[in-house]
Length: 339
Image 1 (cartoon, rainbow, N blue to C red):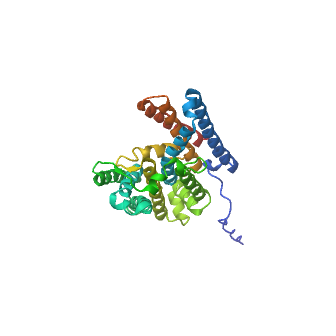
Image 2: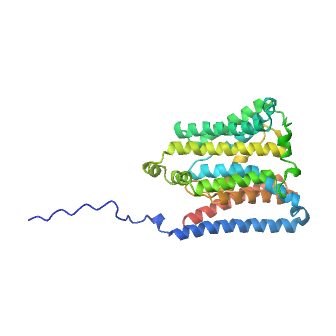
C-alpha cells in the first residue's frame, strides 16, 4: 500500500538568508552611526583647522553665519538629490532648474505680484521641470542621465533667453529684507531656518513614511519592489517632482541671498549636490542613504571652501581638493559595502 503524499512545504517556511543578508540588524545601525560620527569628526577637524589658520576671521560670528547661509541653498538641493540617488536615479539638471526658476521669478512681470508672486513662480517652475524629468524617465523610458542632461541644456538655454544675459535685480522689499541682518532670529538667518525645516521634513519623509521605504525599495531592487506591489513608475515620478520642488525652494533662497536672478545661478550645483550625498554615505547604485549624512556632506564642502577662501588659496586648488574628497568617499563606500 502506497504511503500518502507528504504535504507541500508551506510558503511561510523560513528562507535561508542570502550571502549579503548575513549581517544582523544592529550591525547595520552601527555602521550607519559610525558613518555619521565619522562625518561629525571630519567637520570638527575642519573647524579646528579653520580656527588655527585664520582664528579671527573663521571663528567670527559673521563668517559662521555666512557658512550656514551658503550651505542652505545647496543643502536644500542636496536633500532632493539624496532621494533621487537613493531610488537609483540621478539628476544632472538641478543647477539649471535653480537658474531657470530664479530668473523666471525675478522678471518684471513676476515682481509686480510681490513676495508671493516670486515665491510661487520659483516653486512652480521647479515643480514643472521636475514633472518633465519624471515623465520622461518614469513613463518615457529614458535613462535618467540622458533625460536630466537634456533638461540641463534646455533649462540653461531658456534662462539665458529670458534674461538676455543680463542680471535681473529684485525690487520687492519683502524679499530683500529676508537677507538683511534685521530679519535674523536669535542670530540665525531665515535661510538657515528654511534649510533646517527642509532637512527635518526630508528626514521624516525618508525614515518615517511609506514614501521613504518605497524609495529605498525601488533603489535596492526595482523588480522586487514591483512584485511587492509598488508602482515603480509613479514612485520615480514623485521623486523627481520632489527634486524639482527642492530646486524651486533653493532658487527662492538664492534670490534672497543675492537680491537678483541670473542665468548663471546654480552653476555646478548638480556636482556639489551629488558629491555631498556621496560623502554622506548615499550609494550611487541606490538603495541606501541618509539625509543627515548628506547635510553633513554639504557642511563639510562649504567649510572647506570657506577655509580655502580665507587662506587665499586658488580656485583650482579648491576644485582639486573637492575631486580628491569625492574619490576618497567613493573608495570608503566600496570598502564598507563589502564588509
